[in-house]
Every structure is written in C-alpha cells, then in structure tokens.
Length: 101
Image (cartoon, rainbow, N blue to C red):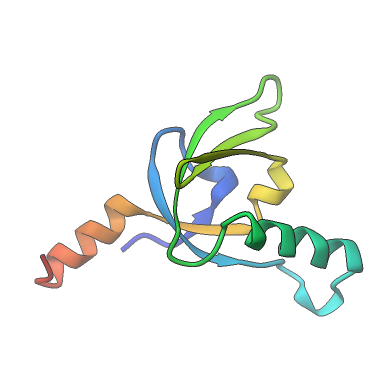
C-alpha cells in the first residue's frame, strides 16, 4: 500500500480517503493554527471521509478545489497540506491483495 500523502499533492480526479488532519509541529500550536484545524474538521475533513481534488487555481495551483461528499470547498495550499489522504486505488489494491473483496 502507498504511503498517505497531503491533499495538496493529490492529482486532480483521484478519489481518496482522509486518514488524518494535523500540523507537522503540533507542540507549538498557535490559536490561529487550532482555528484552521477546527475549521477543516467542521467542514467535513475527518478520517474516513471520501475526497477528490477537482481543480487547481492558476497560477501557483492555489486555491485547491476539493469535493467532500456533495460539497465543494476552495482551500489554500497550506490548508490542503494539513490533510493526509490515502488514494482509494491503493486501498482497494491492498484489500484485494489481502484477500478482502
């Protein structure tokens, strides 16, 4: 199975599942960092939720348009980088290899 990647690195049109929402250096959480994490969780970026990047802005690939369920959100790249995802194709391949159908 592939390693999880940041939502900001997910290719357009690839279905994925959220595995975590976090900051890399969680020891020094500023109030605004906590607010960003809370907002991402409140709008639906929770473990197990299915997501898909549907577009990138131009230039600089910002914002990132992401579909969560039937809703589309525009995230800044640094916000999308806080969300760890696992592409569904790699999850399906792992399940098939493990004998799970």
